[in-house]
Length: 200
Image 1 (cartoon, rainbow, N blue to C red):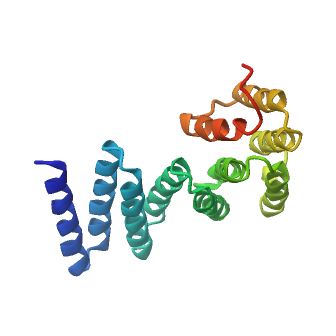
Image 2 (image 1 turned 180 degrees about the vertical axis):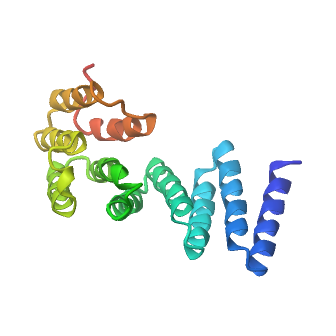
């Protein structure tokens, strides 16, 4: 079966399941389609399908599946340069996690990802990030003093001073405690380009 035939089958299946009121199963078809697009490097189409799946899962009140899809939407949006949309999703997920005992521990991580999106969108404005960090501390007291907030503040200060050495040191210091993902590094690389050459 060719990718296009597979795509048509999944689209048709999702429509049928949706028509007969099986939203959860329809959402799973959109998720499968999104994964197919990911495999073939078509991130924009993957974003569209993950968003459809998220909307359907939300309508079925399936919070965990909704979150999983939205996180993929946010990550791919950032990769595509849609930093504001990605930031909104990460921030929203961070705040929503505070009300969920099982997801509470992910709040700071989501705020950190939102922070990287803010920097990538405004690579010469560290103050925008530092202002948002203060806002998140008010929303979530446990964010204050966390490794994520310390990391974001150091990055914001380095960007404000146009100090590539301080920027690199903030990354090194954070990674001595917690490894950053390839996705994190890709966004940081975007910001670093505006600070000058990478001296590592």
